Amino acid sequence: MALVAQGFGRPRPDRPLVRADVVRTVRALGLVQIDSVNVLVRSHYLPLFSRLGAYELPLLDEAAYGGRRRQLFEYWGHEASLIPVEHQPLLRWRMQRAKNGDGLWGSVARFGRERAAFCDEVLAQVRARGPLGVSEIEAGGSRKGGWWGWSEGKMALEWLFWTGQVTTHSRRRFERVYDLAERVLPKSVVDAPTPAAADAQRQLVRLASSALGIATERDLRDYFRLAPADARACVAELVEACELQPVQVEGWKGTAYLGPQVRVPSRIEARALLSPFDSLVWFRDRLQRVFDFHYRIEIYTPAHKRVHGYYVLPFLLGERLVARVDLKADRGQGRLRVIATHYEPRVDRREVNASLREELQLLARWLGLRCGSRAR
Image (tube, rainbow, N blue to C red):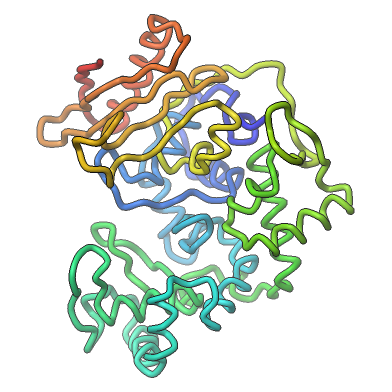
């Protein structure tokens, strides 16, 4: 049920893929998480490859940044995410709470409160001058310290982004270019009525249930990062309305819930390498419960303490996560490097290797690389 809900279990299309395929997949998932790490390829491109196979990367870029015809937009959904534009009204309660200082990183909330006049000035610059990057903000200052040492201009833009007043117009070398939300989003979205917070949150739980198939309250809450009290109220109301069905799952603590459209296949035939930020694996507690697969990303772990590697992708084969593969796109050499392969217990390595080799070759071709492997 979890795999079908996440878009696995059906053959990948054997025809050229188009923008509609990409948008349909994101809509089925509800959102796709963005991450800046580019060891292999930016993370938001991978979930679509995992489900659809090789597609042209500009298809996703056009859907997300293609002017007023865009069908996706950036906002804080799970983390920073690409989300269907029609869901923007469902997140306006979060934008309003951000204006009140709720749900923000402490430093951003404090900046918005203490430097409100400067934030208004930055908003006025964007309104008057059009799409702007951080470096184009007048009196924006310079970065302070390390990676998260944002300049004042960046802090102001991120506060405006959280509060929904600006959004991502485009990206330059992955850096956001900001513009007024009303100029970026389709007019039909801008003009759409704002639902009450409780109604919007219930709809987000519905979307999470559809994307998860079977889920605990905590799973449903985590998908769009709802507050515990908000999620509990939504789940209770949806159960009372018979939109969620409480069930028990052997080995799980507490109650799980099924949505009304859940599919229960007899078996799954799937083959996919998964981004560390894929919605199938991003909530590690659920991943352990569903697949008995303990997984931690080790990017920020010192090299000598890593167990599996720097950028490790779980490998899905059939109904199991059977291996994890440390990968790197060596663009200078034009090769996909397989740094290490780690197998799960009780798997047939020959069967895994044959399928993994095919998937790695497909991945390499998609990225315009040759597949050169060194597995252990």
